[in-house]
Image 1 (spheres, rainbow, N blue to C red):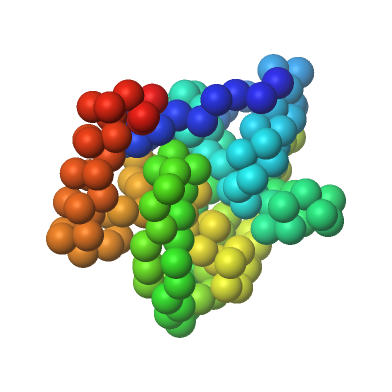
Image 2: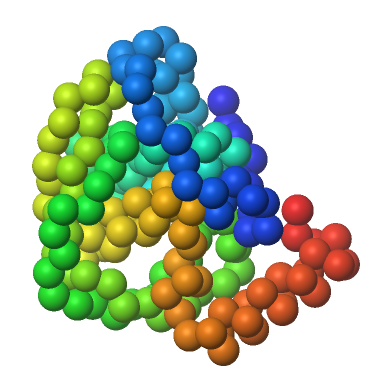
Length: 171
Ligand SMILES: [Zn+2]
């Protein structure tokens, strides 16, 4: 099932998500499959559960855009363990469509998370994957990437979104 993507302005995106305590259930497996389907449909490389209106600490990532199944990643209750180096690149978010900004992030990032059956694992990613770990973990903490750009740029984006919302082009 493809969920519509929740857009900026919905409080679910700025509320810290709840810890997942039940694993390996048909309900969780269905949700994970739906999250991948919704992410591919929206052409994203990452999706956090709050972006489909579900306030639980779950994110899916696939930096290959569905090209390589081995790159499909499920992060449940993720925590950033280590951040090394620095990279700067344009970043966007499915919940803030039409906007992209330069964001400085760690270049090499280690995340600790649980998988679909509740096992903890640690994984280190570089470049785009490192960025995805930080972006998606931020989502689960109620934080959007625009929190990492200058106040000036952030206000400009918010102003443009308000204008779009007024003319009914943002829902
Ligand atoms: Zn996002």
